Amino acid sequence: MIANNKTIASALLIAGLACAAAAHAAGPVANADADLNRAAKLHRGGDTPAAMALWRKWAEQGNVDAAYNLALVHQHADGVAYDAAEALRWYRAAAERGDKPAQIQLGLMYQNGEGVPADETKAHEWFTLNRRQHAHHQHHAQFQQWQRQARALIEERDRREALAAAHRDGERIVAELRRRAAEVAEALPARNMAVASAAGAAR
Image (cartoon, rainbow, N blue to C red; front, side):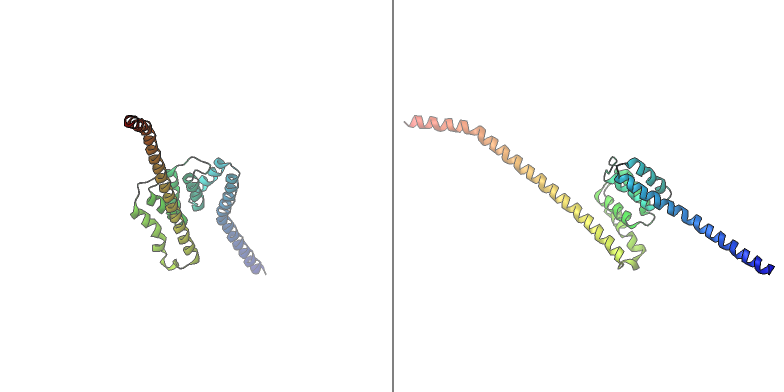
């Protein structure tokens, strides 16, 4: 009976230690999730500095979601000043830990020369890094969604650049038409005077 009690006590002790270890391991993850949710609410409410303090806390501990959020707000000047170098830094931190959206964004920054000299080779490396590491996932629905998102980002960039070029061309055409109209307006009085003089002489 005593032996059985000791066995039960030992089993309970082991189970308790296992539960404590599991709770300790899950603690940081749960805390990170809670802080990231709180940061998102703070950011939506306009308190970006408080949100960034939380993101930075976890990004510096290797949390890819926090790093990605820091990169995003710096790249798009969302509550902070635009800072391509800082965006690149945090995208890289997340990308090097295997975050696929960050890898795509980092590739786009290299492709566009944003915060770094344009480098098509580097851009291609980041675009294809995940595919090279996980080629067997290329038909996975999530992977295909990320590919569609990357294509959409590239297409949107191309569309914006085409619109900007069209706008610049339109402005040049309008400026040229105005210049010619001004030249004609300046020449008309002299021309009219010459015509009048010729008509008088003919009479």
